[in-house]
Length: 159
Image (cartoon, rainbow, N blue to C red; front, side, top):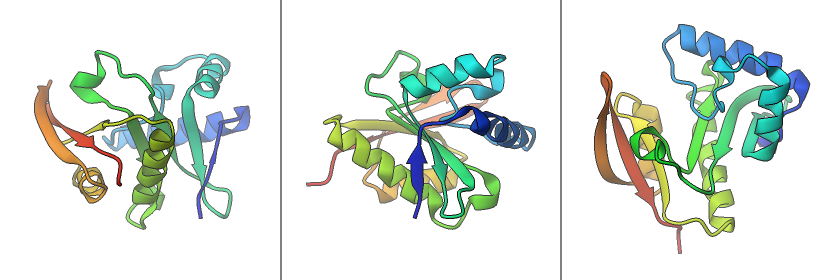
């Protein structure tokens, strides 16, 4: 079972290490509220606490990923973004955590009466695409961004 909590200052060093490792491996760090480009941990933490942003922990209290939700979309989200962004750290991938985090995000957004729910992922991210489709995502459009393609999906809440 996963636990979703607002971040605390001691989480920031772990999150920074994980996001830096992922970037070095060429992985995308979705849902991190741009931690990797923030120079001020306290300022980033204040921002994270104001947002629908969660540190995801497993039963051993290890940080396994991030979940970031938006109630309102901005212009950038039409390019690469949406209501729901998440990251599962590499050592916790391929064991079902991604789907569980995504499903929790959908539950929270549905409780907030946000629908349709818009999400996106890079075309090269087959795991995320599979999770989106498994949870009712319908391809709305594709957009070329720099050297990659982003697929945008729409999800209606289950009835």
